[in-house]
Image (tube, rainbow, N blue to C red; front, side, top):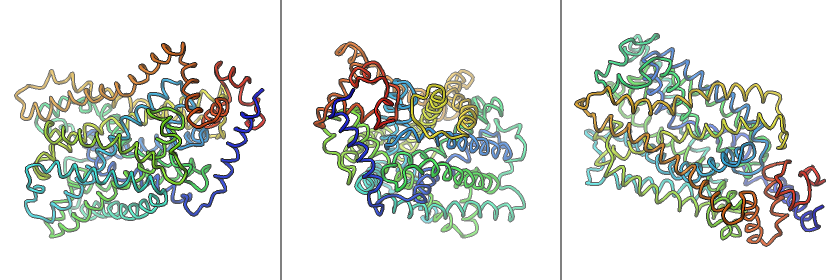
Length: 595
């Protein structure tokens, strides 16, 4: 049996949870606000930046593009319904990281953790501010004739400073106060709904005034000449243009980017008045986002020249309403800030939870500096990880990359290249995030058989889990396959094709290089850690126990109490052999305080 110290530690944990539940709610986030955080963290860049790409991958078929949005929306809602049970298996701020830890093998969990800490965290603070700035510049360009940036020799450096200031502001303020993050979200979400409504109204107005869709290449059926519209081999020899079927799955993979970020709400449970309602907030928020996206996608498909906000510019400016387009784009930029705001609320807190579990460097030195009042340690860690990445990647983009996305000279010296590099870095993040969520759902299905994790079972879980896996797995697989296939298709593209190096060769190669770079950051740290644990302690299990012991020593508590603490956060019942020996029990059910 456990000694008295361990039992008292377990009791203390329960008392701290009770104290948290009864804490003053004035500084916490209510259910409706949590639902708005789901909407605010998802709606922003995706719908405006990806609607045109979905149309292109649908070979100009508006009907097929709408089907892609419906299919993706159904897949994401199925996933949200499945996550109701998955999310009940944790009571911390780790969101998908915690889901993978609880429901998957150690290697999958470690891969997810590495991805979120070393890739997703710094890259989000790199490319999201740039997307916001780009929308601001698009709006300004409609107000200033012949706008071409700031007309300096290094406009990219100025934009880099803006990106640093934006990310640093949200990290610092939201880390200090979840209440401020909630206020930010209310303000930004209120503003971002204006361009959403404008997009719908503009689409309808354009169709009425033109007596049909704005772009004649967009039709109800497939445009049989779609792959040759651009009249260049680079457009013809792409995986998505081989058949509408491939294009559909590539389009759906792109749509996932538009939904990315919804899980942020699951990462701020400790800031909610009623944490148990987190899954419901995610579900209602995702249904709302799906409806919004579908209506806007239809409006921009029929009313915009290219399915993007840019496609409204000529229509408005030719009628002396350039200021409307300017306001439209500027408010889109403000909407993108909402994504950064939601992520900053989460990232500053999930980092601290990882520190408490001794899962990232210098955890034992920092754990005692963590306080419930503000995520000061999370702020520090976020800034240390993000600022160097923003600086280095902006320099690479501004000085050494190409304008592979064809942004042109409108944005200023080196800025188009930097934006193109941001596109490259952003390409893989959302699809990798959804991949780990699918792994967690797989683990949840397995848990239904093994019952190793305590969850609040949902009667719809199995059906929704199977539907989510069935509808999301193939688009995710095709999304990974697409750039690899495009790389091999370079063989059919003549090297004298206009823009061959900058628009075809470099981006296709660099997309694979980026994936390879991501794979190194995701898997190599765990491989190195496992090697060191085995070499120093004889096995991975013993090494993990040693990490827990080091954390216990840092906190000034005994190993058993710290072990119970970590197992409780995972809501595990089953234990490995090392844990059984330390606790002298067969499962956590043997503890009356835990059963």
